[in-house]
Image (cartoon, rainbow, N blue to C red; front, side, top):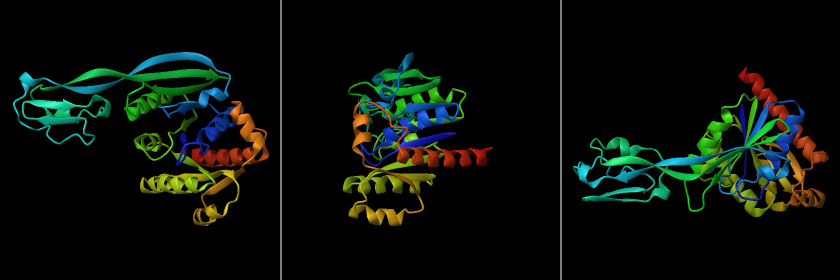
Length: 284
C-alpha cells in the first residue's frame, strides 16, 4: 500500500507529517519505507539517525537528430508536448533539459533519424533507519527531468517487500506532484492555516478531485484564523486532525528533531494510522 503526503505550497508541513508517520508506523511494527520524492531538495532523512546504504546514478533517454537519415517525412512534427523536440527543414532543435523521456519522437521516426541517448539527471540514494529504508532522488543542478527521477525512486522503493510505502511529495501542483500521487492509495494534504496555505491547498485538492484520488486533510500550524473558516466548513468531512502552531514544536523541528510525544501530533498520527489500516483491510 502507498500513501502520500502533499501540500499546496512549500513549508506547509508535508515532510513534517511524512517523517512523523515513518517514526509512528515503524514503532507500530509495520514494514514501512519512506520515499522522498521532492527531488529538487530532499530533506526527509535529516530527522533520523541514518546509515548510508546505496547510491546509483539516474539517467534519462533524450533524442538526438541524425540529419543524414532524415527523409523529411515529418511524422515527428509537432508531437512533443513539452517543446523539447522541434523539427525544422533539414534539422531539428532539441532542448534536452525539457525532455520527459517519453520516446514519442523516437518511435514516430521510421528511418533512424531520431535516436535515444543516455543523459545523467541525478542520483537515487537509500539509507537505513532502525530497519526501515529511506529513499530519495536528488536532481542534478540544471536538470528538469524531475518526473523521470521520481519514477526511478518509486521503482526502487516498490522493489522492497513492504506493507506500506510513505511518499513525501514535492510542494505545489506541478508534474512532480501528479506523478507522486498517481499510484497512491491515499493522499494526506497538509494545509497551512494562512491565506496562501488555504489558497494553494485548495488548488491541490482540485487536482486530487479531478484525478479521483482518495484524500484527507490535516490543518497544520493551526491558529484558527478567520480566513480559514470557509475552508473548514467546505471540507469539514475530510479534515481528520489539526495541529496547533506551537513554539516548542517549531523549535525542535528547526533543530532537526521530531515531536512524537506531542498530544496533537499523536492524535493526528493515530487518525492517519486508523485510515491506513482500514484501507489495507479493504484491499485484502
